[in-house]
Structure formats: structure tokens, C-alpha cells
Image 1 (cartoon, rainbow, N blue to C red):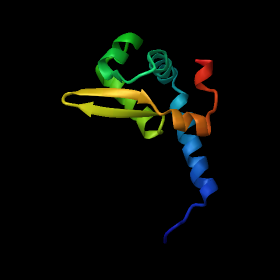
Image 2: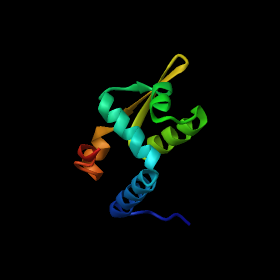
Image 3: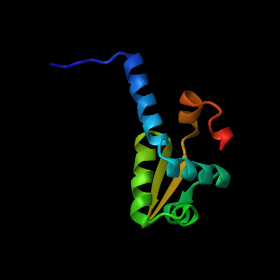
Length: 99
């Protein structure tokens, strides 16, 4: 049996993922740091500035990426993270202004 979701249900699923992701204060701190930098930043730099281990940082970056709130780009051995501004504008307009 295949269940098809309506557009509204798909949008609600996205909203739910976003709010679950933002329920963790360290992720808001990561977003605040990214906004302050206003460009893509290495994972190591973020981890050092928000004072979390590499494994914890990796976990939080994955959650932010899967919720569509950030982009991650890999170049050689380094990963770069940046904010997905379009997602915030669509689902949480002006949220980033409050950080």
C-alpha cells in the first residue's frame, strides 16, 4: 500500500523537522556563529568556537543539514558549512534576525 502525502502534509513534515532540529540550543548557537561569519566556515572552526567535540559537531551538522537549514560542502579533507537562507526565508522568516 502506497500512501501519498498532500503538499500540506509534506510542508508540515518539513516544519516538524525544522522545529525538532532547532529544539537543541547548541544548534542555535551554531547558526548564530554562521550568521555572524556570513560565509561558509569549516566544521573545525565552528566546533572550536562553540566549544564542542568533533563527534558532537558532526552530529549537529548532520541534523542541521538534514532539516535543510544548512549546506555542507566538502573540499579535499575539509568540510565547509553555510546557512541555507532560502529555507529560513520560506519557513522561518526573520528568525535569523533574532540571533
